[in-house]
Image (tube, rainbow, N blue to C red; front, side, top):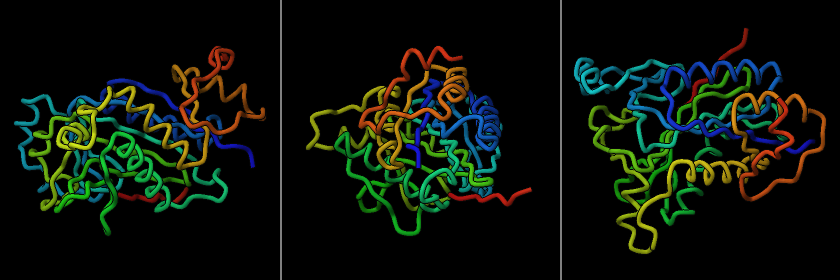
Length: 275
């Protein structure tokens, strides 16, 4: 079985609709085997999204108020309820073909691996997190636990879309506009808040989002047993896949590997929804 490769692209801040269109395009390309596993890492302007299980009652603020604050609202086909995306939050959209892994990864295992990647990332920064039985996402070990990362995915013909949102330096006041993930009795937190109150850690603030993207992608590589290959653009993704298909790839590495300059120059199913 050839070594799995996860192509990683950091896009910076882009609007939600653009990212959604990009996901849909990549899903089609992955299904057609024109590109391999791809992890998009980015940041959104303020936006509230509703998953397939969302209840409108979990949006506390009125549409008029959201509009006046420049906060967009979108209904999506991901699993889960209501969540917020915005500045200071690292959003990840893994577009993976679960059938390409050996052994093949199931839907629940896929979500568990995302959780594990984020748990390790938080641990790298001295923040201890884990899971809460019966709930999805990454949580602190407080009483009650606070959610630091939300997860909601869509899987079609074994190809994944949507993904996770890790609160890094997010303004947590935004979450007062909703009932996050429909869970009213558990708070939301961020890496910045947890690191500031963690007296054990000497680092009081998380790194910037691009550095956070590197930490997350490194842990994705470890958890999914794949090499992470950083690319500069979507054009690099398409061209590098076309040229490297069938070639032997380098062994897995602990840190994200930037694509070699030579590569960078080369230019009716049932859907599964999971939160």
